[in-house]
Each structure stands twice: as C-alpha cells, then as structure tokens.
Image (cartoon, rainbow, N blue to C red; front, side, top):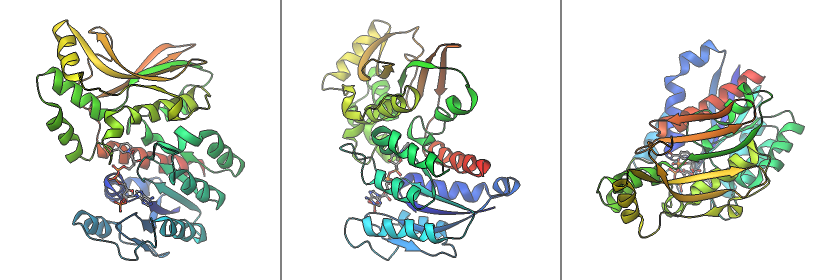
Length: 343
Ligand SMILES: NC(=O)c1ccc[n+]([C@@H]2O[C@H](COP(=O)([O-])OP(=O)(O)OC[C@H]3O[C@@H](n4cnc5c(N)ncnc54)[C@H](OP(=O)(O)O)[C@@H]3O)[C@@H](O)[C@H]2O)c1
C-alpha cells in the first residue's frame, strides 16, 4: 500500500524521520508499505510540494546546510502549511498521513492544533510529535478522528519512542489508570544530573541544545512548561482529564537548583523534576527530593521514566535509558505503521 505523507515542520525530528524511513524501507516493504513525501513546509526555510513525490533526503541536506526549500511561505508559514495539507488531501493514495512536527506553542498549542484539525477534516490521518494537540485539544481532535474513521496518533509527544499511549491503548485492555508520576523531560534531567555531579548549569543546557534535544526555546524545558504539557497530554489521554498545560501546577528548576541538587545528593537523595497526576486531583510538575530507593531517583542524564498506577496490575514502570532524536523519529514511524495496520 502506498502512503503519501506531508511534513509540516522539518526540523531535527522530521529530518531524522525521513532518514529513518529511508533506512527502514525494506522493513516497510515487508509490511506492504511504500511511501512518498508529497509536501514539506517550514516557518522560515521555505516549502516544497510535489504530488509525484519529493526527494526528502536531499531536502534534509539542504536544511542541514542552512539552505531553504524555495517556495517561501507568504507570511508566518501558515499558507504553505495549508498548501501542504491540501496537496496531501488531493492525493489518490489509499493512505494519507500528515506528519506534524512544528515547535510547541505553550500559549494555546497553535498552529499545530489547526494543522491537525485541517488534515483530519480533509480525510487524512495524523501522526505528531508535538505535545500541543494532545495537551490542549485531545478531546476535540480525537472525536473528529473517530467520527471520520481516521487516526490521530502522538506517540512521540511523551518519552520519545518508548510506548506509553500505545502500551495503554493496545496492550492493557480493561486496566484503569488511577494516576502517574514520572521524569519526562530529558533536558532538565540531564542538567540536574550534571549539577549534582558538580558541573555547571550553562554547559549542561548547551549540550542538550547541541544535540537537538532541548526545545527550540529552552526556557520551556527549564521552567517546567514542557513537562507540564506532557503531564496535560498524559492526564487527558490516560485519565480522561480535560485540562491544558496551564491547569498544571508547575515549578521549574529555579535559581537555587544547583545548591539543592548537590545538597540532596550529599544526603543520599536526588533532586528530580517530577510530573504527576491522579484522577480528580490537579496535575503537577514539581522539583522533588526523592529517596535513593525511588525508581525515579536513579534516572541519570537523558533517561526518562513513567510509573503508571493501575487498578489491576499495581504500579508499572516504563523506563527509557537513552532518549534522542532517533527515538522520537521512531515514534512517528511506529505511528505510521500503526495507521497502516488499521487499514
Ligand atoms: N527534539 C526532540 O528530541 C523532541 C522529542 C519529542 C518531541 N519533540 C517535539 O517535536 C517537535 C519538533 O521538534 P524539533 O526538535 O524537530 O524542533 P525544531 O528542530 O525546532 O524544528 C521545528 C520545525 O517546525 C517548523 N515550524 C515551526 N513553527 C512552524 C509553523 N508555524 N509553520 C510551519 N513550520 C513551523 C520549523 O521551521 P523553521 O526552522 O523554518 O522555523 C522547523 O522546521 C516539537 O513540537 C517538539 O516539542 C521533540
């Protein structure tokens, strides 16, 4: 089956995704899946459209080298995004998927929500690594998808490639999630680990920026907004909450986090940024001093973990020891494969 894909956003994650697609061609073929990229749009690096298929690897190289795809957006990129979705919607391919990887907007999740909504309303499936749509508009978007028999998937939005939403949806039938707690932001965990080891804040953050792991606006990580968006997405999907990141009680690392991280370690404890929520309780992101025996305390560097509190299986912990761009790109790939398997 031929899948046509349109990429709205072509940054670190999307460029890794097109390379991963290429690497995985033989596997995809074994699952009866071939693909074409029919549109790519960005905010400041132009856009490209071709219903017959673009060359995504050469487009990735162009952006890597600081170039532009041409066909520049008229204003802030919206018109080329719309054209990308229209190009996808016009395709006669049996599988049409929008891959949405624009940057997180913490005010309202836009324009990502509108990209997702437009694609669904035009009859296209959606896979996104952007937290905004599930954190701000999960109910609305999932209802539109359900009503049209389409998929709205966002596995990469929380803990990169480690299955969280898939795990609960596909492999835990009849299990109710009562709550969760986790370390879900790699950048702040890397910084806290560096600080407790006696290193400085700025170089630790710079390492995450150089690796393409930190958000484009790193204050979203440092001030706890990224973790709050993930907490909102998890609460909306797993606990049936109808919240946004602004409803999450939130702390960031704060100006005295270096002293607190070192003090905690000197007492045999660890300072970690913990996102949590329970049914009928406010979700929160807090800097917590955890005893060493806590499964979240031992997470170092870019590791993440989520502990799900379930009614039938007690606590289930899912840990990602090494996150990164390939992991997030894999989440998008796994969403595309899941969409294929539903058709
Ligand atoms: N990086 C990670 O490890 C990771 C992990 C999990 C989830 N995520 C999420 O995945 C998404 C992408 O992350 P990334 O690291 O690839 O970010 P990035 O490198 O900053 O790339 C973002 C891309 O989106 C484009 N863009 C931004 N606003 C746009 C708009 N209004 N219209 C069209 N294009 C727009 C940018 O274009 P210009 O460059 O031209 O501005 C760029 O191509 C984010 O939502 C992020 O939170 C990232």
